Image 1 (cartoon, helix red, strand yellow):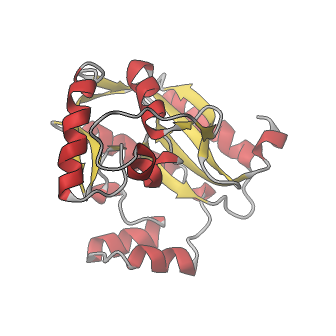
Image 2: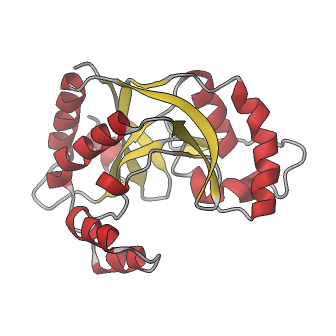
Length: 233
């Protein structure tokens, strides 16, 4: 681990990063390089209801990913070096899984790739990562808790927020790869019509979760990949 390279990281997370043709396309679509933590030039597909930079702004600097453990600050008394070692060991002893087919979906007002079919294996590995690395997580601040609660949480989500610092983990987890920010129904339909034929040739069936990435949020904004390991158990 390069300590100098780590000095600007404010939060950490565990992601699944799409690879191959889908990963390359998605980085350009969102306009963000996870490897380098910097913007990329975005394409200009015809027929978009707004500039692509507007449609993807809320998703762009998080990079093309599925969140496995949501962003967290490092707990007092813990070190990034220890977390990196634990992450390497976890990946070395955890087997990869099949995620089934990914499909373009409307999800809470935005477009995302979601698994089509049984998600038990995905949910299990996400729950395992959340619990295995929770001792590295600093408690959520009062401001963070208030911001989450402002969205309106049910009783189960409130309990998860209190225990794990995030309301959409464990039984509330839903694997997804975000492709846009929030869209109006009309915008969603227009963007879906543009994306569907492009993604048809890019989405593997089935897709596989064979690697996980430890990523960091930079002080100047945006996430970048810090470590990327195969699930080799």
